[in-house]
Amino acid sequence: MGRTKIILISTSTVARSLVSSFIALQLLACSVPPDATNQPGAGSQVPGQTQASASETAAVVPTATASSTPENIPDLSRETIILAAFCDQSSLLASDNSGRIRALQDAVAAINESGGIFGAELDLRLIDTQGNSDESQRALARTVRQIGEGSLVLICDPQTEAALRAMLNEDEIPALGPGDFAIRGEFIFGVDADPKEHLGFFLDDLASHWAKRKPEGAGDEIRLALIAWPAEVSGPLTNEEFLSDLEDLSIQIVYQVELPAELNANIFDLIYQLRDANANVIYTNARGFGLAALLNALDALGLRDRFIVGTPASGYNSQLFEYLANPTNSQGLYLSSAWAWWSEEEHPGIQLAKVIGAGEEMSDWGYIQMAGAVALAQRVLENAILDVGFEALSPEAVARALNALVDYPVMSGLFTVDYSGGSRSLDQLHIWAAGVTPGELELVE
Image (cartoon, rainbow, N blue to C red; front, side, top):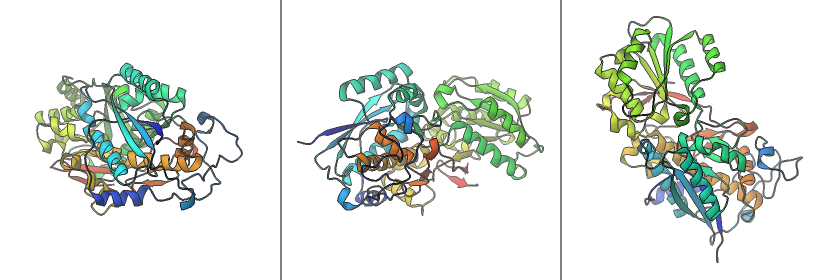
């Protein structure tokens, strides 16, 4: 009889069937023996250290490894790895996760159809956190109590990430998540840049191209308005050090406000205040319906052409288009992204994603993000098993495998991760401009 290993991941609903071409490509991309650069050798430890806790080795990169060979790849065809999945499925923000949820399900199904983790089948368990901090923590504690402590968590939304951060650090369980609360040296490993990195990259790029992109009638000075959702929903957008750095870019913040993550938030009065403050750039980390409300109000007030609007790409999702009064209201929106986009048809990672993507996913960054996250989870689980063996698979082994990744191209370059030296978020960003129709984006930087 086969044994069961438990991994904790964060997701939702029913897996769909996938075509065989994705399975073959996924095998090539994720299941071939890793090289010595991105994979600890079988049974290896961090040089110069005895067995230590994950917190002691979290920022250490193994430097001497043995390359894997067909001889040390185990046959786990009788085994099962439980994936306990946490994701908001029922709050106001739940539909913001719809693309992420489908991607997680599809990618897990693809791994199973292509042979699993060295033959071990992934058993996906879906748990609704209800978008609530207390319920998220109770769900994690309940799951650990029922099926044991897992080796990895994959989180699909910032509010769940915020709720579980302290517990993950205390129990030293590594997590793959959106990265809004990814702190250097801790146990959340982001599959995106953090909010301040997005804002900083957007402003630096805008300052370099202000003469070309500035709204008609705007002067030479960038006058910035920051509209932030609460930190527990979208992550901390700024801090004092970050704000002081803006002075080097000659950017003046003329308005800053926290907007409730609610459908009835008063956006019209806010826009009038931005106008009166002579702002010419709006940056927001509001996602889905929050971003749609801002764009709808600018259009309704006839003020859309007065402002450059920027946001992290995670806000550009299927929920955004559910709430936009007119899809054209997103035209000209600038998005910062660490990932490739559906329009890059020759990109091998996008080709993989398109095999499993369908319809509405083509206008959703979240689907791309989470499809890549599952591929990354597969790689680090394989690396950890090759390092310590299936029986000894543990949070420490997975943390070591994550820390060993240096400029690793996830899913054939869909995005690139480097967690060496304690780094916990992505840093290779690009700027996209939204077109007239949903999903129409142009790479501008």
